[in-house]
Amino acid sequence: MITIVKRRFLPNKIKVTSWEIIAPYFEDLSTRNLHSKEALEDWLKDRSELEAFLSEDLAWRYVRMTCDTTNKELEAAYLFFVEEIEPKIAPFTDLLNKKLVGCEYLSDLNTEKYFIYLRGVKKEIEIYREANIPLFAQIAAESQKYGSIMGSLSVEMEGKELTLQQAANYLKNPDRAIREEAFRKISEKRLKHANELDLLFDKLLGLRNQVATNAGFENFRDYMFAAMGRFDYKPEDCFAFHEAVRTEVVPLVKAFNEKRKAELGHDLRPWDLEVDTQNRPALEPFTSGADLLDKTVRCFRKVDEYFAWCIETMDNMERLDLESRKGKAPGGYNYPMAETGVPFIFMNAASSTRDVETMVHEGGHAVHSFLSKDLELAAFKHCPSEVAELASMSMELLSYTGQDEFYKTPEDLQRAKEEHLEGIIKILPWIATVDKFQHWIYTHPTHTAEERKAYWVQLSKDFGTGLVNWDGLEEMRNYSWQKQLHLYEVPFYYIEYGMAQLGALSVWRNYLQQPEKAIAQYKEALALGYTKTIGEIYATAGIQFDFSAGYIKELMSFVKGQLNN
Image (cartoon, rainbow, N blue to C red):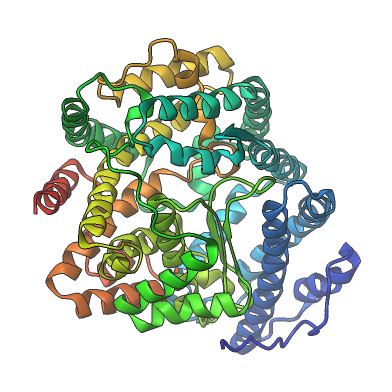
């Protein structure tokens, strides 16, 4: 069992029931005399402890709310924190940042150790505006409505009420009529809320644009690049990624679709994209959440004993909620717990191969949390998405070694791996589409809902293959962007999946050549947390931080080779 870190600054028994409970600790930090380098480092540790405690307190409120979106008390507990506590923390955070940067002993700190942290602190000072504090509270309150709306949706299939995630399993059914029924029911249920979700997005758009304006930025896109600490690349690099995906990846997806069309013997409709072309029934790699957990542990153990230990520890500490059910928010996540170091995995498993991919993906995030848990400051553990997603996406591929635990025959395992590898190629155009969509949305903040829809349709064509027949289903396609929760809850957090996917393919390529070395490099890189630049972390993993057209072409050739093998 993992050892829980003992507190040195806060009492062991403290609950955030009001601002007055925690205010004295912020007052202490803001008024303390930093009379030496040692005093400054003690101050940093105490500040970190307070931040870690509050981060984990908020994490639990979010986790409990998403596990049961129907429980108004859990929703109120989360909203209390984001509306009452966070707005009062924000001015102190700015005050403490300025106190740190202005300390006369700052130059005595280890430059290499604190460089990344201090770079981020200075950027926070630069973009902080008091006027944005209530706006952040509004944004948090509004964005959580998306999960409540989507979590309430269900459809009936074969006389059973199913969540949309559960119903999506029917899209792999060999019976085309059943697939169409499932697709239409899922899409029609979403369409009933299209106007509501449009209005919600318009509200979020306005609030986010105001945040950017207040902070002196021309648009929210540029503000987010600063707020997310994107020191290693610019918007122009994202545009180059979009174009590289369009030229190097879309043709591969088109070839997949042409092959699929020929094998099925009819035109491709949206419900024909996941079914097995040989009419084999969908793979069922597990039967329940408990079975998924057990097989994941056994799978991870075949890759590395430590990986299995991480998941077992989470199970022992009840930090897993895996099965889909009505009232549960959509999607899946691994929520790091800053103080205890043991994260929480949330997902909506419905016995599909996609669920296995999600579980090992979130398991990669979890392993990352464990490997970086002993870093001195909480800020050292807060990785940018480009690094966090490298951990998870690499694990999807590394876990191939143990995925025979999920599949009954070598043929089933081979089929699952083929589906996954093809999926890696197919998801890149979607990632590029969503990211390019966001760039346009936030650099055109006065656009209308109709203009937004029209731009999405254009992007769908630019990054599509032209082989899927949407006749009569145009509105379903027009609003398909609304199923991407990142657009509502975590804007601009999406292109990182593409960048990290390239890195993960490189980690796997290394693993196929030298397994033990690749695993050691992977673990060493994750243990760095965010104490090095993204490029240095990738280099520690034995790979490049690169998303150029040439690199994408090279890795797509590698994946094609693996599929051919």
